[in-house]
Length: 198
Image 1 (tube, rainbow, N blue to C red):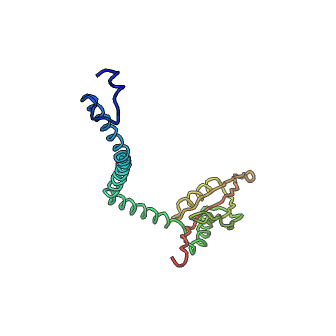
Image 2: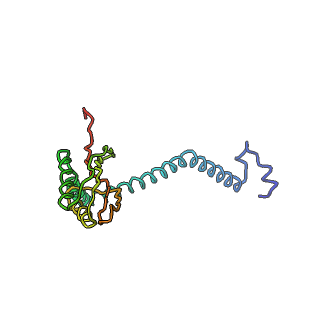
Image 3: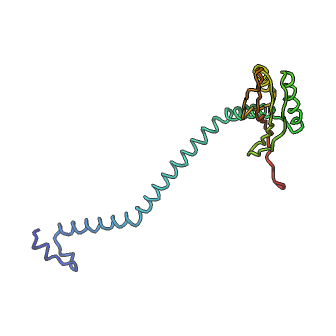
């Protein structure tokens, strides 16, 4: 079959075509039908399959993470218990409301026991924080260097948390007496307020 015969083929009279032309025509028509079928039927399903495979992988990853967490659950529970115990022991070091006036007495006792003279001791305004309330006490004492050191050590040895801050020291006269001003801070834990009806 040559080029001239190919030009003479009539689409309205396919039955008279040579056998080779008919075979080629059938192959072309079948390829077009297969292409159209793939485009209209399979391509959308292929896209859905790709999306579902991606979702499956995502779910598989989430499952693996959750399985790992579930596998370590006893260790996490033990860790939470240990943290709760540590938190409780730290809370016990903070004074409760009824113990706060006694803290002032303890500071006075430690100072007097170490031979210090109190020039000033009074509560400053409370400072609110997210989880606690800061209770500052302004102190001014005078005494020898070693007496002041013993006072600071005594405050550090208290069973309650007391932080000495803003410490300033001045020499008083020629007899070795020093004046020390400081802010003693302790904290009260603020329990979370639960809204009524919950």
